[in-house]
Length: 470
Image (cartoon, rainbow, N blue to C red; front, top):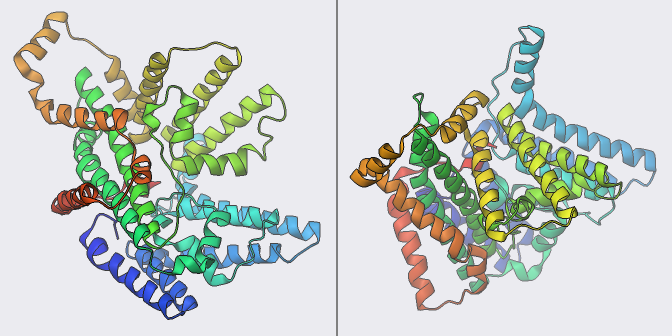
């Protein structure tokens, strides 16, 4: 089920909210919690019922390991439990997401003919696997995570963030589900949640899905793209991805607020960043937080000298690339960002400074070019599009004729959408900033109604969120 669907907006969400708060009103707290788990599992299985067993098995195994870690004292047994949790989670993720990729490369290198399984990627597996890894690791480090099975199941399956994040941590989520105040209807939270949900819905339906047409046209064509077409293609995807994923996260935060659950912020105007390090502090923030806490710091962080720090950073971005997808294009995308992070760190440590506008211009162009690897169906296609972006083979007279006569008119819609979205990205407050100023007055009511009305009208063209594929 999609957030941007009639079934979700007019049936699933209101019914789930009403029954949940009714059960809590009559102090049926465990029933209310169980209802929310069942509703979340229905939400998940709505896509592919065959993977319901997978998520349930994952929950049972990880809860057992985490629960035992909260009891067992002997260091050796604790380490064995930790290793078991790491192997189980990474093994499940590796099998479902990377098996065919590894077999394909083994067959290519060793000229073997091992059959591939063509496994359908379970939705949300990258997200709920990382969440459960955090539970196992935090339990090992004795962060007081002894909760009942029902509460843990809700932590994993809570439907607003189940499919595409944000990636939540047990220490920030589990206590919220136990707070009695959160079990009562809070109309302020309900209104604030509806407001940011409407913003996210508009981002997805009005902006991202419109930009998707131009991005898909360029990336899916087999013909040669002109210089202008290649840049329209790359910029369309750069903007589409931001509005698509940040729109999902806004809707997730909004739905969470309706249940009195505060989900972490995942975006903070990343395209305003003046260097690549700032970009990664503001883009998919919960993934960066997870990789910092559970990979970068355990590897040594910046505590073992500059060379080791640079290596650790490179490993983190390599893992980030692999986490996003099973393909060389994702690995290269992660490595490119990693190399840029290293260059930025060396530059910064040398004491040099860069004009902020120049820094922003360089950062955004690098991000835009690197997204081509992220979006292209394979590595050869990505390289082809990047070549077309820099193969400027028009004479000055031809350029003048294009802009004077208006041969570029076929990109009129793209130009309009670029102008609107770029103004929003670079000059307007982001959704979190807008939410912090929210008060239920007439102007906000009009804004909410406008976003929802236009979005609902456009829901005839329902599309999945891009991060469902990762």
